[in-house]
Structure formats: C-alpha cells, structure tokens
Image (cartoon, rainbow, N blue to C red; front, side, top):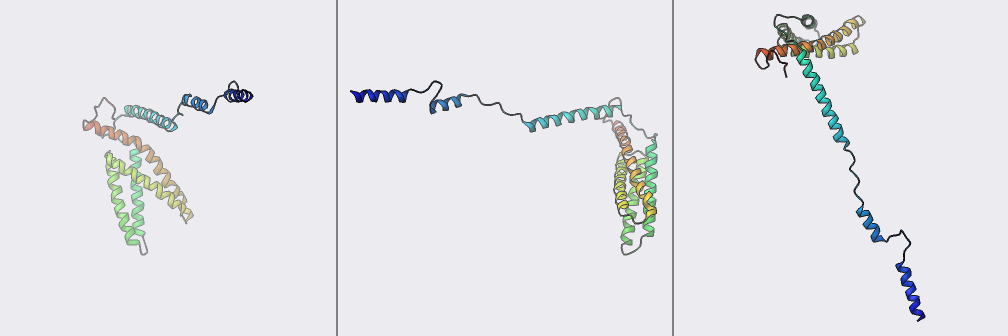
Amino acid sequence: MMEGMAEGKRKRKRGTRPAGTAGPGAATATVAAEPPAPPAADEAGGGRGAMTRGYAKAEQKNVAAREALEPLHGDERPGVVVAAVVWLALIAAGMVYTAITAEGDNAGSTRLGNVAMIVLIVVAAVGTWRLKYWAILGTQTILALSIVIGFVALVTLTKAWLVPLAVAQPLISAVLFFRMVKVMARVQKAELIRRGEVPADRPSA
C-alpha cells in the first residue's frame, strides 16, 4: 500500500509544472503561431524608383527647354556660329603650318594626317556656316578633340613661349563647344519643322 502511494506521488510530480511554463511541444506551437515579420523595404527598388522620378523630372525640364527654343533659320548667324567658324579656320591654318614644317622620319605621315584633318575641318566649317545639323555635330567633335589635344600639349610642352597658346586652345574650344549646344538644338528644331516632322507651333520631341 505504501508503494502505491509513493508511485502516485511520483506521477503527480511528473504531471505538475510551474505556472507559466510550457513543454517543448507547446514552445514549438507558440513559435509557429507567431505572425511572420513584415518584409524589409527593398532598397534597390526604392533606388530605382527615385532614379525613375529623377529621369521624369529631367525629361519635363528638357521638354520645357525645347518648347522655349526658337528654330534657327538659314538667314540667321548667331555670334557663336561666326566665332566657331573663325576658330575652325585658325585650327586648320595651324595644321597647315604643322604639315609644312614637319620633319623627320614621320614627316610624310604627319602631312598626310594633317591634310585629311584639314579637309574635314573645312567641310565642317562650311556646313556650320550654312547651319547644317550634321556639320555642327562635326564641329562639336573637332572642338572636343581640340580640348583634349590642347591639354595633352600643355602637359608635354617644352617651350615656355608656347604656354599661352597651349592654354588658350582648350579654353576657347571648351567655351565654343558649350555655347554651340544651344545652336545645335535650334538648328535641329528648324530642320524637323522644315521636313514636316514637327509642326511649327509645337516643340520638337
């Protein structure tokens, strides 16, 4: 009888747990029942959204700028066009001088390269004076090359008296390059209107 009472006490001890304590199975069930944490914000997606909004605002500004532009007609010659043509003529003259005074083993290739560049510069200058869009693109390319060549010449210069010329060449070319951007846009708009692709009373797209 005593053994039965001891056995009953042991069973009650095993079945009794402190208040607020759950077994392993209950803990697992509690964890499974918890709602999942909300997903973190997609930083990459947020960056793409901001970039898209930035592009949209930039495009709105571009549309407004194109709307404000007046087409450049063939009888108009802005001062920057005259300056660019004169500057191209000076660059061509410098290349003529270089071709004439070229010496050494590479003199022949130097003359040939300069002659080819002179022809391109003359074509670009004439087309720019006639306000041709393709020619202005060529002029912009020549000005960009002039900027790069001028800075390279400035770094490798060995004669002090050539420093002012080496400094002036990239600076003048850079000023003309940036000022010709608006002229190029106005010429493009005039050509689109002339071809009937854009109505005269609407901005080009």
